[in-house]
Image 1 (spheres, rainbow, N blue to C red):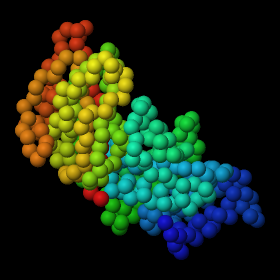
Image 2 (image 1 turned 30 degrees about the vertical axis):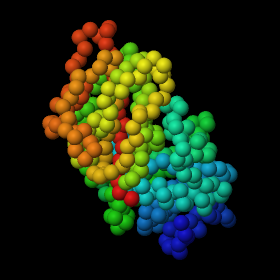
Image 3 (image 1 turned 180 degrees about the horizontal axis):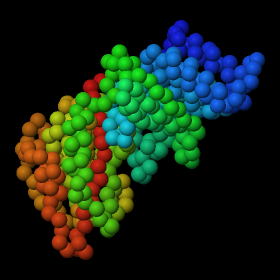
Image 4 (image 1 turned 180 degrees about the vertical axis):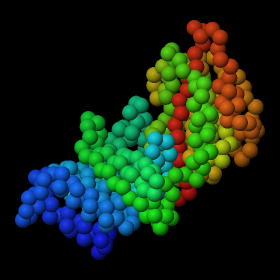
Length: 345
């Protein structure tokens, strides 16, 4: 990302005179608090674009690191605690990767394409397989007419936080860049999430975990990308995969996939590959596991999908889960969910 002669550039020139570690400013002395206040004041007044926000985040992080060097894996930031992403998050990630290449000896790395998860510490393993030493992740929060962005840089091997950043900026910066900070189907996606959170299968005897080739959090796929799905269970079980599209239609991606004793407690790849296609927005993958076969649900085949007949989300949830088991000691059920944001390039 090219440097620009702008108000943010002037602010960074001013900040270059300040030694945050010692609290020194030449020729006078400043306390750590005064330095922090000075930084906030200068940067807050100078941010005029999303790129300025990016530079501010990287600047704050770099000031906490004595020798900024190594390879950084940047994950898409997500909106509040929803795990949903956006066009802003996609742009922000790319801009962060470019900016890291201009600070010290840091460099951002791209995700490796030939990755197969071997444990459930998927984000760490994915970053390591991509050759990274550091992991940058974060969230952004809506505060009336402003956005508060929180970033965290941590060591991949130890999980220890190295540095953080907190930046507040006006929503008008996103509007001027034609970027959305929430998916367009945000409200309907929340309704689906709430419906499938009620009466969730919980068992002390059966556990199931689900993930993709990009992990199980901060998930952002663009049109044409392929997706692989992996599951792990702690005992033999039947697996059902339900996917809720951005337009709220529900489709069975895979039904009654049986995991036998030889694959228990192992990350198992579902024998299908999926491609990111319209509609786009916040979507959800639900993995259900049962020690007995699921009751069949009525579907309609359309455009390569097996759609479940239209019904309120709570009704669909009951249908795909099946009946509760009366004799709990004989049968067990469990489920896991992940949120995926899809969009065009």
